[in-house]
Picture 1 (tube, protein in one colour):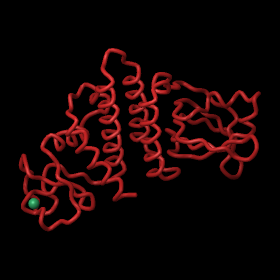
Picture 2: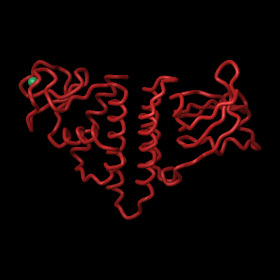
Picture 3: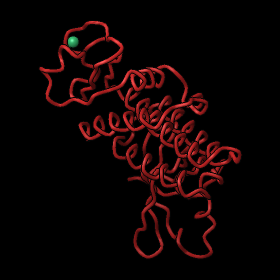
Picture 4: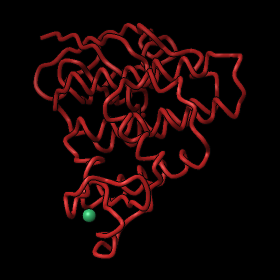
Length: 244
Ligand SMILES: [Zn+2]
């Protein structure tokens, strides 16, 4: 049987003398792993369409087992993102986290769309010429944190930002903490009762709320200070460490 998938390449690994094993996130089946035979031979036509992060279509022949790739079409290879070392290395890191937190064959159309939106947004960041390198760096970081927060929410993790996860009271403007094990904010009064926590600023809370309810591509217009980005990254890192 031959199957066609709309896919994003998450990872590729060499196998044997001339083969490669690919991990894709597909629209139809979620994450899948498929082998491509002879793809590292110089005359192979497949390899060019099977680069990391390519968005496109793959054709898989499947009998028993995981099957093999018999064709690939790249719809978008994100050329600007690939040429810029900073966007490229950030995408590598983000996709590695995504890959680690995703199980095989769990289809999720919303997660597929989010991953694609992240790549298109990073391509935009890399392609824009008129912004400073400092601003580019900020956008890369905001998109990474924004993507990871949205991905975690879609994966079913709780991230409460309106009320304290201990007492249930509405969160005040200042003096709040974030707790990864409790999945949300803790007010200053309850903070004594929780040992693992990170101080979170009012602006960072606003960012996390924004990430929870708006599309990723709209974050490109945000003006965010270095302090907020640092605080945001700390929260996301701690949350990921707790999950992984
Ligand atoms: Zn409380």
